[in-house]
Length: 87
Image (cartoon, rainbow, N blue to C red):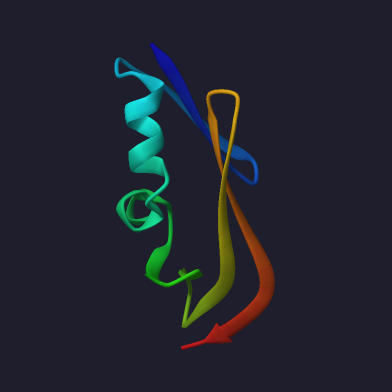
């Protein structure tokens, strides 16, 4: 059994998945299949990921460069950059 955790600022989720870690690595190494389940996900193109955060009258978006890495039974998605835009 593998425990998968997600930490988004102050929110975190942890679930146990009854699949072998090797199978999960294949899926987690393809972020276009997993990122649509992240809060505020808007799209992915290559190594660039966009998130859209609705706030009252305006919608704010953020674009980051994504790198995917693996540690002991853990997938690490690292988002870097500070590019924001309003829509």
